[in-house]
Length: 301
Picture (tube, helix red, strand yellow):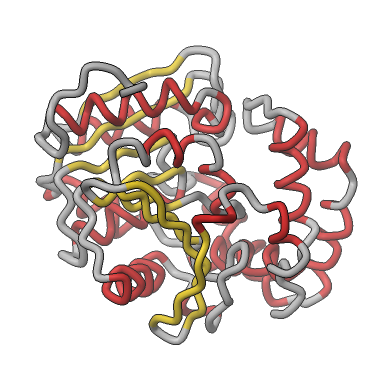
């Protein structure tokens, strides 16, 4: 699908634009932001988002890490592959081709929502070997009951209808509609955060890729494989997350004995956008515990 965000127009004021580059890997033209120095931290955003989601967190992490943050397949300014490549295993394989092209080996993998599932799948499949995975409200568990029977077929139907992404994008240009959508996640963003999401959901190409990703998403194999994850795992869950409740993180903690759970009171699904400094502190502390970073005295150093 065309009608993707335009770098020459939408990219003019894109957050951390100076860190952006475009890289061809695996038949996909990737938009990726690279900043900082130190151990490599690979960041993967959630469904329907893009690198803007890390706009405040990435510079804080860049004080300690070489941050590598791409727009995932079909999202933001990254080109959209065939719809069959927007499944969890295929997106994982495609993302590792980008890492290989950049000659980066992540020592820490930080994923929000569906991004956490992608990075964990990559680790389980031996595509990357981080010392630490950080899950920010990670989308690890499939919908159950009637939702599982209804949502996936509905997403497939919507993704296959070329008019649906345009309808979503048309609604996405309404500031009030985007505000309600974001509030429904349990998060409160500032005007700039809402404006950036409005820019994305106003793009039929971006919306279409997100729908195709949802239509192809199957988390059951990941749940089956989670108990064999040997990597250190930090589960950060927000108590006001209306999209992925903290019960998901609690269930994952039962499946992965070495996992540590950190509950954040009062924040929603986009907690890393609401309080990036708090999230950065948790990530740096975890990186120190597993030996990715030497002990730091202060985040400001």
